[in-house]
Image 1 (cartoon, protein in one colour):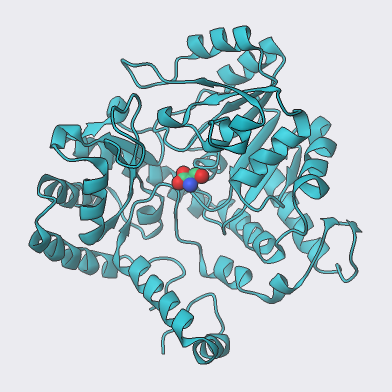
Image 2: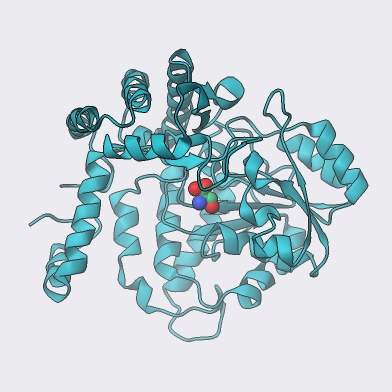
Length: 425
Ligand code: DSN
């Protein structure tokens, strides 16, 4: 019998006895996460301690409200857990206030709209095809249909955000909310400049650091906290916590943000998640995590450079953070075909639109990858070179199933030398 690090053996046995089908699927997923090189830029491996908290009895408790002001009794321990989590978030990021209840990034962002905007008000964010997030005003999102959304992009020649364009658009459109951040931005975000633009036009400035929160916490990416009215983040990407969200803000916005999250948008917080976030924040405050976050960036730079050497169309020519976006056109393959072949070969990433992509989002030209998970396993620059070599072999012959199987075997051998946090099998 194999035991998940986050689950007491007796509970593991109970799960297997009550629902062997689900137990076996969880075990299979655990083996998959153990045996593959996981390069999805928004994923990671949480520690055994975080797993233990998220699988704990805290899931049994309802706690609508905030520490000291709840609508249900029995909050003696939950209040302490949430307060510790809040204090750790404030301490780690240097924020004046933290709300740790958002269920994830999209609800966190929606709460910001509810705190500051009325339907029809103007929001400005980076367009999805340029690397933004759905909740920054993209039309198919509630944020693009209930609000008046104006989207900025990236320059055609550099694929980087043009702050002159952002400034000009902001002055013309006068947004009430200005978002910086996104899901496919491989370069440093100039939060100070965004903050200045927001101030010029009287907008609330929201820095969405979902992807880079771990890097920001460790000083591997400049922090938006001094410049942003609100900092929105998920907790499970580079920050390496459980699936969840947080909002940090200036003290002047505390009431508006807290009211918007509860009772505005959500019911009871997920206490097991709050405990997991608290643990992840404690881990992120250590010297080891600082080293880890800087290694994520070093690995991303090394992987990007190796892919450039192999002729991949790396967008912006490299990476400053954990994320690489690559146009597969120079390799004569689409993003989707490459992603599916790489998955069979043991390397998991996602197909992704690139800026000004002539292809459709469901069958785009690019792939997106990140180095947070492989760095959590202790892999470094030499492994990045090896991964780039495997990736290029597969992308150059995406129909060669024999090659994919051979590489998948080699990857299992490499992964065995770099155990993943939280996976003890
Ligand atoms: N789904 C997340 C990502 O992959 O970037 C963003 O919401």
